[in-house]
Length: 227
Image 1 (cartoon, rainbow, N blue to C red):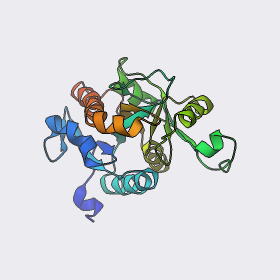
Image 2 (spheres, rainbow, N blue to C red; image 1 turned 90 degrees about the vertical axis):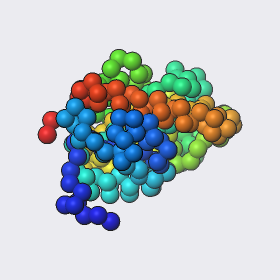
Image 3 (cartoon, rainbow, N blue to C red; image 1 turned 30 degrees about the vertical axis):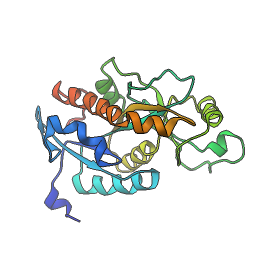
Image 4 (tube, one colour; image 1 turned 60 degrees about the vertical axis):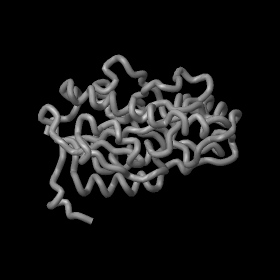
């Protein structure tokens, strides 16, 4: 692992669970996924798939690169009945750590445990620019593959979309006092058809999330904290 001193610091760190979700940033930053956009030094990195990997991967990247802010890009499924649809890009205002067992009243998380994380309001407003919906996101440990369970999670939490990494990244950023925001492309409906729909739409969904971030950077990165 390269040392922090060798890597230096960046202004903005763009994270994703795995490399295919960052392909959409290549048009702006090149194959190295690193560059200076309108005076903002940007680096894109992966953190790993799933909540545990996201926490560890984000912490490592933060210590390596010491960014002023972090933006996570990726994909998400939408809960039936939520105001979201496949192909849409969402800028969450808050991310929730969600246990389906708790939603069903069969268990509960310890009270001292962090369960919600607010996205940085200025970053989220800048990224959304009045175009992308700002809804709540649920971070589950596993992909929800049951239609009825997806409905119960949506009713219990009020979340519109589901993702596997957002809370892990947000919590790691909070522990390091780094402003965090997130952009996800909606790739599927949560439930029995979700995995097949994700395979069909995830590339375009991730591309849509990257396009939101690219437009924001080219437009001056409104809301990015000052150095």
